[in-house]
Length: 281
Image 1 (cartoon, one colour):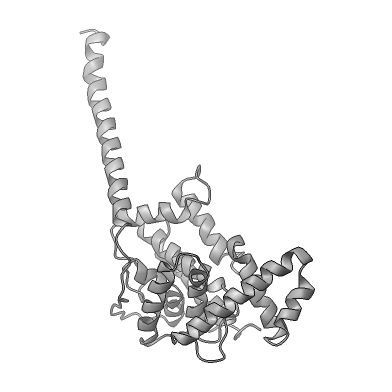
Image 2 (cartoon, rainbow, N blue to C red):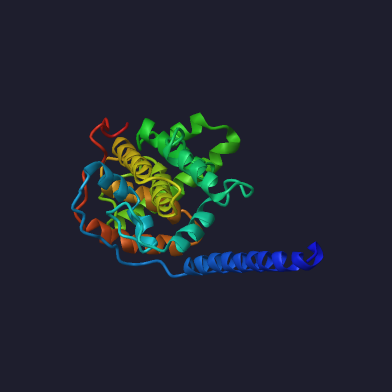
């Protein structure tokens, strides 16, 4: 028996297996992406948790809106969706980091950006909003507009005042819908990216990219940061909603306003981990 006669018997199964693996992988990804097109859940879910951890509970509460949207329980660390769905979601969440890098590396980079060394640096897309809010925190609401004029160049002043107008309208709506109490204001939109970070950590755990200990560490970090920056869960929830309220597309904002009222009816953990140093001024 010569090599020419044996080779097809060897290569045939190898090529067939390669094709089957490719077909299976493509179908796996397509089914995962299809599952992402389901409408967002409207009712928050809770599960019994016999091993209650107050620091972990605070971090999970930061990501409660993201968990509800994904149809996940809001008060436990592991996600309940299929691994296929979690992979598809991970690809969607971190595809903007670096298209040429593996999903795992992109997810680690995204987590470091929102809950690591740059956790208190707002993303560029929200930098103008954050600038306006922090100026108000420093100067107070009465001198806020004057502070914007003094801190910005002539070219930036118009933009910052437009953002300030939009923030005031959004906060008025949040008060009107019962999310904020009268007189309450949002000090920062950092909570929106910490909420993303909590969801990323839970997703990383589900796809096997990180251990339960590592995921829990990131989630606890979100709870500790929240305790430093926000005086109440009401204000934190408003901060998570604010970017959607400022968006042209109102669908995410309307969904968030509906679900937030249901989350507010639940018993909430203490805001911030024990090592938190109180609301940041």
